[in-house]
Length: 176
Image 1 (tube, rainbow, N blue to C red):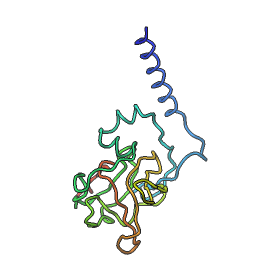
Image 2 (tube, helix red, strand yellow):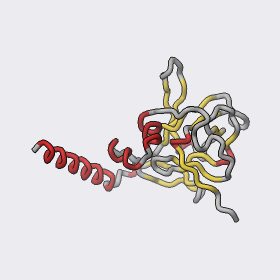
Image 3 (cartoon, rainbow, N blue to C red):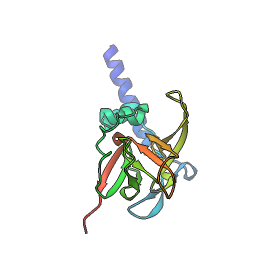
Image 4 (cartoon, rainbow, N blue to C red):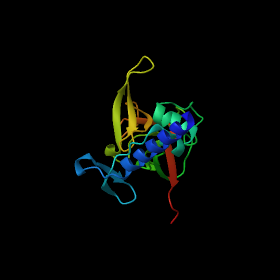
């Protein structure tokens, strides 16, 4: 009986989550997100999924970083030393975040960028963990924890967006 109840409860929770995803938010609840492929801002719905669906969508490491505010160890992520041309996107929802043209060698062991493709694609929050105050960076669309931004970057912005590779997907530029 207990197993039947749990199965029915889990199924009901999943159906409720799918129904919530299908519901279109009002125009005021939509976000303006920049698409690097079109070069325009687009109106999109925020993505808010239950933890079980995030676990299904993401690798265990990406889940830990993006949904539990984790940090991968320096020099272990797949993109810290990536030098290909292309676009870095949110691993959770595919939102365009950073162009390889803004990536630079910060010698920190994490992929670092001096600017996003558009500030609207990110949200910033005060992070007082680890006995210090930092600025946490999240995906504006799905709320994924991406990393932190610091004021010690190169010109022209003076910013260093220090991101976790596990929070990013990379799409190489098409060869012309």
